[in-house]
Length: 450
Image (cartoon, rainbow, N blue to C red; front, side, top):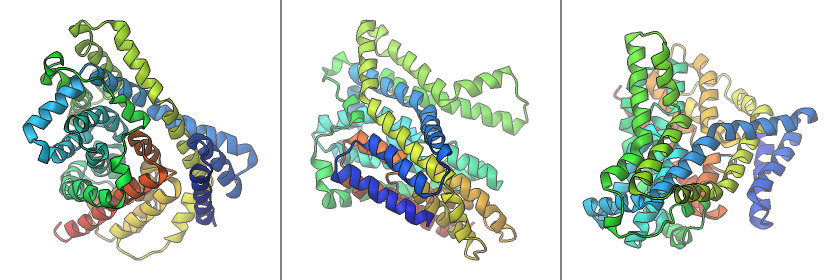
């Protein structure tokens, strides 16, 4: 019954948005109430669950998202994104530009959260597409693929890092195996899938982007000599990666050398948190993209205001998606899925993937699906001799399958690229499923050798 209720709720949500054109934010909140009642949640707890889900989601991403949007807008409005775009075009050539974008997404994705990477790269991708007069989604989809794959498989992202701790796996080996799996997965689900998607969903590729995130990239065109240098532009865009990377290395050194916590490492931890990283990055951008080039502060702050205004509705939609996720968790959907697999004897790798996939479909959050799966399969792993690092990757693969309306990532991609619901399902949902299946296949292949 819980899974049937979730399925009916999703259908109602789609009808409200696609048939009756009701605002997505309003639709998500209404359906959250309906599903909560249908799952039998106490009436006195429903509002609290929805508010907790909304607050928890926005508490984790609002600052990062807002600051990331400002950073991207500052780089775009100063001509920095145009400089990066033109330099990439010159180095790689038009024929290989899609692979250049994938490489940039993969490198940035190792250290950045999916949302942050998307916010930073969209202005650059938009500028490249505009300069070369090619389709925005043709470059954007492979870039988003690279970000998603690194988020699912590679530490220091929260999912694989925390799952590795839960399973007692070696984080370093998870990273090594993760690279082996991630690279072919990105190639298949990125540039190769984009070719197929363009044939089946041409409308998604042909339109001019109208999404709120895409508007951040709509900066005016400059003469190349009037833009910041490539070094300064790249440094500003990569500054969040540099800060997170330094923080991660110092933390790993502390753990490997057994150094106890002290004031220095407390500062390192604070500076390495996404919110602090993005705030410092914005301050750096204000100087490199503005003050050092004699751009008035009032003009810089106008760019910042425009960036935040562009993502206002998106933040509400993401928060409402978090509310729906919390209702599904509090309503016991995850516990029901666990009962289905109680006493199963199939391979732990496949079992972990299946449970994570079902939890992902039911409640939306990849991280919650992965962590819940870890708690469910640890008792089943005893005596199997299964490779712990591959268990981490199998769980991560299952946790990102079929992103749909209860996943905040679905709405991020939809709004970022200005897609309709149907186009988002046909591109992003299929793409995430392809990443998940490829991840499992490569994990099983790797298990034959390690």
